[in-house]
Length: 157
Image (cartoon, rainbow, N blue to C red; front, side, top):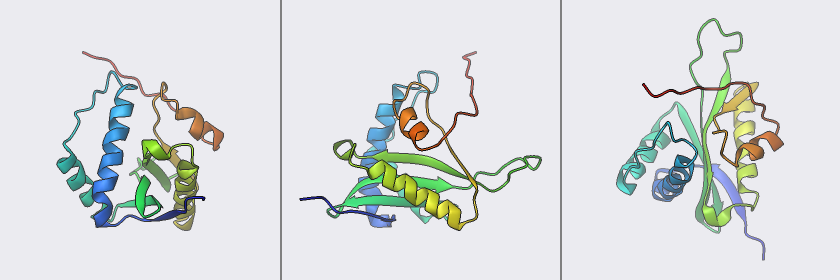
């Protein structure tokens, strides 16, 4: 039997499940950012953070629901661009995360399609996201048409 995957806007009641996926996402990604260590929040703080984000009008959060449980999320916003930038209306995917037990089930792709649809409805022509170079998910993004255009450098002083 195939699981039904539903993509919908996040609700406050989803914050706990989102927070659990988010903490797993942060732990996994800490391996890829030795110069940018992550100070892991408690589950309680992470739940509060997601509740704030879901209520924040500047952000939009969608979840993937599988058999009634949150299996993934994507958080979106419109970054403020410097006035001299030619393209002003850019969307950003801040987080796209899928529960570790639900990976390889097309959930990430469905969440990305929802993000693209949302941004198109807002007349956005370009979207961006940040991915660490050592993150295997870089291939996910490239396979879906994303191009590398920027390199951020860090140095400890």
